[in-house]
Structures are given as structure tokens and as C-alpha cells.
Image (cartoon, rainbow, N blue to C red; front, side):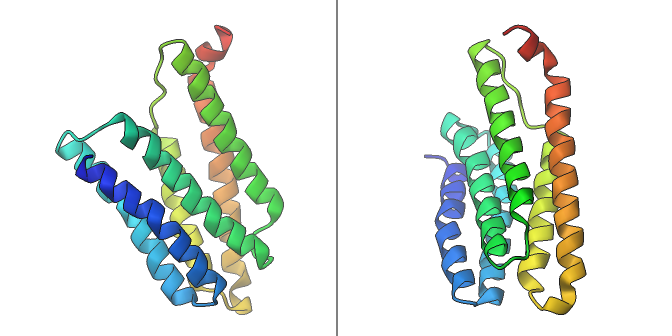
Length: 173
């Protein structure tokens, strides 16, 4: 197992820790774990590319870990009424749709790599959720609104961009 994959697994293990801390109302501790887990996304990618440690396991686990971390934060915030359920559904729908597109492409022998719009979406989503986790005071409701709008707009944009760039995959089916 590569170092990059071990770091990705560490991110996966940090998710339940984040959930428990947040559920216990230890928001600052939860934020610290969320930030650390988010930073491991950059670190494992850097190590994988720099030291040629890409692996099929890493290609599978890395995006999965990102999705679970982000969705865990959204669901925790949704439970508090700070992130609307319809926005979570949009994020889930995009993730399922892009994963489905990748599966269809894979069946055709084509690999759909992550592109800049997906990377920007992930980065902005993690930063926006970090602000929401850290600023849980009701007087910061504008932060929740701006974060949610950014997340939804970038999610929809990147999903549409994936399908537009890869429309040939669907035309072959």
C-alpha cells in the first residue's frame, strides 16, 4: 500500500471522528478534524503524483473519501436546519450522475479524469463547509446562505461541464 493511499485511508478514518465531535457540539474540535481531513486530500494527491504512487485503490478511495467527508458535513448541518435538504439532494444527484457517466465511459474503455471544475467545486465546498462548521452562531446566517449558494452553483456547473465535455460517451450508448 502506497503512502498516498495510507493518507487517504486516514481521511476516511477521520470522518467518524468529525461526526462524533460535531454531534457532541464540539464544533471547534470538529472543525479542526474537518480541516485536517480536507488537507489530506491535497497531500495524498501531491504525494501520489510527485512520487509516482498512483494506484487503482487510490483512484477509487480518494474521490470516495472526499464525497463521504463533504456529505457527512452537509448532513450534520442539514440536521441542524443550516443546510437545506434539497441542496444535499442536488449534491448527491450530481455525484451519482458523474459516477454513472464514469462507469459508462469505463465500459467503453475511456477514463474520465477529474477536471478543473470538479477540483474547484471540491475545494470551494470544503472551504465553505469549514466556515459553516466554524461559524455556528445564528448571527452568521449569511455565511450559511452564501456557502450553500456557492456549493450548489459550483456543483451544478461542474456536473453540467462533465456531461458537456463527455457527451460522446453518452452518444455511444
